[in-house]
View 1 (cartoon, one colour):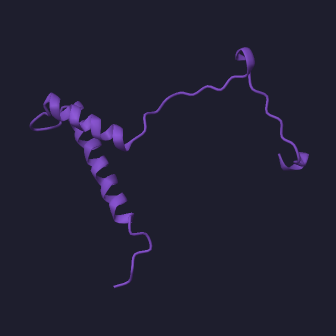
View 2 (cartoon, one colour):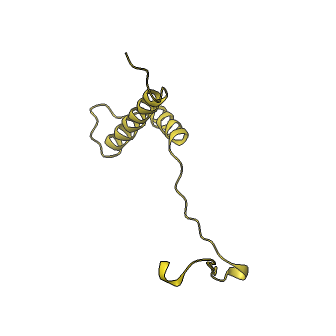
View 3 (cartoon, helix red, strand yellow):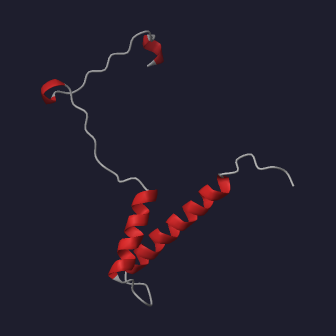
Length: 82
């Protein structure tokens, strides 16, 4: 059998599948579609595991001095390339 180009690929795929399963289960729980709803400890455990796998989304705003807009200057470029 040929050697894998990326031996960690299988681990990565497994982790993604497990993350997707957690998301699906929590979604079904939130929508009331589970035959047996998750208890509080199961929900918390899923939340903790997801926080390890998925980054929290946050809004980031960049401002200049005193809250003014940032001015970006490009140098070394021809006007036609912008």
